[in-house]
Image (cartoon, rainbow, N blue to C red; front, side):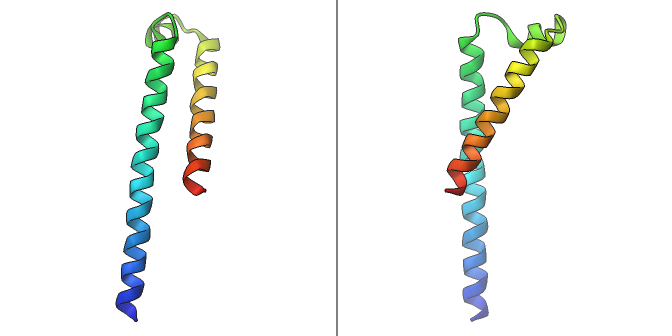
Length: 75
Protein backbone atom coordinates (compact mmCIF):
# COMPACT_ATOMS: atom_id res chain seq x y z
CA UNK A 1 0.00 0.00 0.00
CA UNK A 2 2.85 2.36 0.83
CA UNK A 3 4.50 1.61 -2.50
CA UNK A 4 1.30 2.60 -4.33
CA UNK A 5 1.26 5.93 -2.46
CA UNK A 6 4.87 6.61 -3.42
CA UNK A 7 4.18 5.79 -7.08
CA UNK A 8 1.13 8.08 -7.15
CA UNK A 9 3.14 10.86 -5.49
CA UNK A 10 6.00 10.45 -7.97
CA UNK A 11 3.54 10.57 -10.87
CA UNK A 12 2.09 13.80 -9.51
CA UNK A 13 5.54 15.34 -9.10
CA UNK A 14 6.56 14.24 -12.60
CA UNK A 15 3.36 15.67 -14.08
CA UNK A 16 3.97 18.97 -12.26
CA UNK A 17 7.52 19.18 -13.57
CA UNK A 18 6.43 18.41 -17.13
CA UNK A 19 3.63 20.99 -17.02
CA UNK A 20 6.01 23.55 -15.55
CA UNK A 21 8.52 22.99 -18.34
CA UNK A 22 5.81 23.22 -21.00
CA UNK A 23 4.53 26.41 -19.38
CA UNK A 24 8.02 27.93 -19.37
CA UNK A 25 8.55 27.05 -23.02
CA UNK A 26 5.22 28.64 -23.99
CA UNK A 27 6.03 31.68 -21.85
CA UNK A 28 9.47 32.21 -23.41
CA UNK A 29 8.08 31.66 -26.91
CA UNK A 30 5.36 34.24 -26.26
CA UNK A 31 7.91 36.74 -24.99
CA UNK A 32 10.07 36.29 -28.09
CA UNK A 33 7.02 36.70 -30.33
CA UNK A 34 6.17 40.02 -28.67
CA UNK A 35 9.81 41.11 -29.13
CA UNK A 36 9.60 40.23 -32.82
CA UNK A 37 6.29 42.06 -33.27
CA UNK A 38 7.49 45.32 -31.75
CA UNK A 39 9.31 47.55 -34.26
CA UNK A 40 12.14 48.47 -31.86
CA UNK A 41 14.59 46.82 -29.49
CA UNK A 42 12.76 46.20 -26.22
CA UNK A 43 15.97 45.85 -24.20
CA UNK A 44 17.35 49.19 -25.43
CA UNK A 45 14.05 51.02 -24.93
CA UNK A 46 13.55 49.83 -21.36
CA UNK A 47 17.12 49.82 -20.05
CA UNK A 48 18.95 52.52 -21.98
CA UNK A 49 16.15 54.95 -22.84
CA UNK A 50 14.26 54.37 -19.54
CA UNK A 51 10.93 53.93 -21.33
CA UNK A 52 8.62 53.32 -18.35
CA UNK A 53 5.48 52.97 -20.46
CA UNK A 54 7.01 50.13 -22.48
CA UNK A 55 8.12 48.47 -19.25
CA UNK A 56 4.56 48.57 -17.96
CA UNK A 57 3.21 47.16 -21.23
CA UNK A 58 5.75 44.32 -21.29
CA UNK A 59 5.11 43.60 -17.60
CA UNK A 60 1.36 43.46 -18.24
CA UNK A 61 1.94 41.11 -21.16
CA UNK A 62 4.09 38.85 -18.99
CA UNK A 63 1.50 38.75 -16.19
CA UNK A 64 -1.34 38.08 -18.62
CA UNK A 65 0.55 35.29 -20.35
CA UNK A 66 1.48 33.75 -16.99
CA UNK A 67 -2.16 33.79 -15.86
CA UNK A 68 -3.29 32.16 -19.11
CA UNK A 69 -0.64 29.45 -18.86
CA UNK A 70 -1.48 28.78 -15.19
CA UNK A 71 -5.18 28.46 -16.03
CA UNK A 72 -4.43 26.11 -18.91
CA UNK A 73 -2.22 23.91 -16.75
CA UNK A 74 -4.60 23.74 -13.81
CA UNK A 75 -7.48 22.75 -16.07
